[in-house]
Figure 1: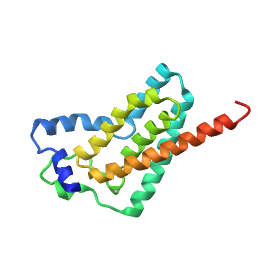
Figure 2: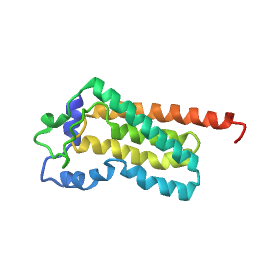
Figure 3: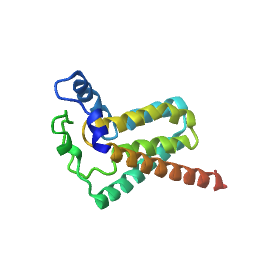
Figure 4: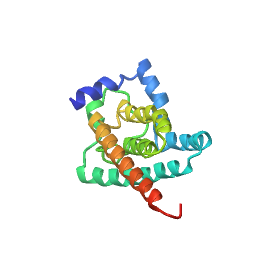
Length: 172
């Protein structure tokens, strides 16, 4: 099923779909979405604690994802989609789970703890990051699913723990 979905989402080279993927997928690379979202959220929502919490969640999710990826050791899907358009870069890290997706889910989940409106607005951005990882043939759909679960759990737990600590601190 994983390979079937991967082949349905990826595109044949030279098609309009491939051109679209080649243009938009790099927008989700690295931490670009969250580097853009941070000043916007700070300007509009004025909740620096939420943004700090979201960045801490990214750090935790990246560490957890990297550890899981090394332990699982799944290869990237390149061989499965040789006849499909690929991302320009070829990551050398393991595939499962998707760290980019884990980071995206962690950011949104941590924001949701005390700023649900911002999290709702950012949710499509996180979905775009997840889609881009599969569409650019960097990950299998299950890698993205596991990354989303890992990131959402990390962001939610960290977000709730730090919110609880902030409320429990009598100096605040």
